[in-house]
Amino acid sequence: MSQPLLVVMPARNEAANLPAVVAELRAVWPAAEIVVVDDASVDGTADVARSLTCRALVLPLHLGYGGALQAGVKFALRRHASVVVSFDADGQHDPHDIAVLLAAVEAGADLALGSRFLSADGYRGGVLRQLGRRLFAALVRSLTGFALTDPTSGLKALGPRAQRLFALARFPDRFPDADALVLARRAQLRVTERPARMRASRNRHSMHDGPRALAYTFNMVFSLLAAALGREADLEE
Amino acid sequence: MPIRQKVFFLTIAVMLLLVIVELVRRRRLRVEYSWLWIAAGLTNVVLILRYDLLIELTDVVGAVIPTSTLFFLCILYLAVLSLNYSVRLSTLTRQAKELAQEIALLRAEREEGYGASGAPERERRS
Image 1 (cartoon, chains in turn green, cyan):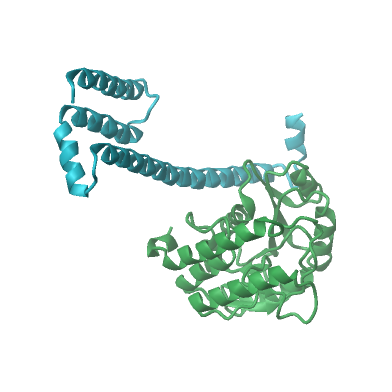
Image 2 (cartoon, rainbow over the protein chains, first blue to last red):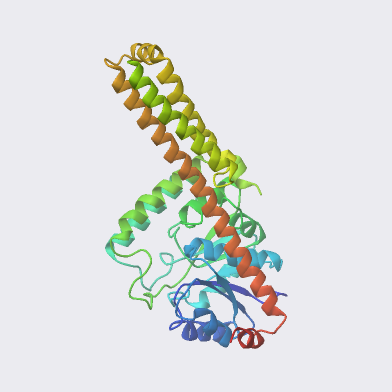
């Protein structure tokens, strides 16, 4: 790659995890430009990011994961990045897995997802979460024909076409996982999956845990259907 | 409807209309948000002056007493109004999101001029 790798890391109150995660990333990708999207944190995440010589995108309002990721993708678009990688700031992704995603994009994919289920080992989440992921995978398969095993993966590589899709005004910013794939299908993007090793999050409270999981599931299914039944105009600028 | 009732309710309906118009005139209420309210106020006036219309409407929808028709209309109106608010809220949410992202991007661009450490940025803030 002629350009340095661009990594977008949506982060909310991750000041404690950031140094270790960034160090690990830099150990594998020394030249990577890391963009930490600080989603209105209160623990100085942005200052930690700057002190680690990462670029900090500081959101003045809390937008949630999707809005933060979208901000990072907009940054990449303005840079005309040929590929941008989304990477979680809580340490659950392994920087070594980025290489196969980049290779997939270079080989012509618009969107490459890291899947924990294609990987031989690693953390797979609790029983309920696995069940939920199966449900999403089945829904995504019936709606798009993509046979993806881990459609809610946070580790992805986006080529220019995927970046433009993710930056759309009407892009689903609350649940940009499985419903994003439905939109990707409708926009005729090439989507592929590569194995990725996931670890348990460094945070005790992850975004999909606890009583919120039920509401998440409901919203996710609903936004999947909304993405599938949406108007064609949603796919345009 | 007895004339005493008519006068009483007409006064209230007209006052409501005047308040709406005054709010618009003082720019406290935007014109595009006022039409639902003005429509409600005018409906009040019409139904007070032409109570027979309400009775006819009751017949048409198959209700038994005009009061139920009136209550139904009120609830329907409130439901439409809150749906209208939800749509506006969704628009505002999207606009706020885009503004927040734009601010973050512009800030980052400005910081770029100062190098990756962002040191002058912090000096100015303190």
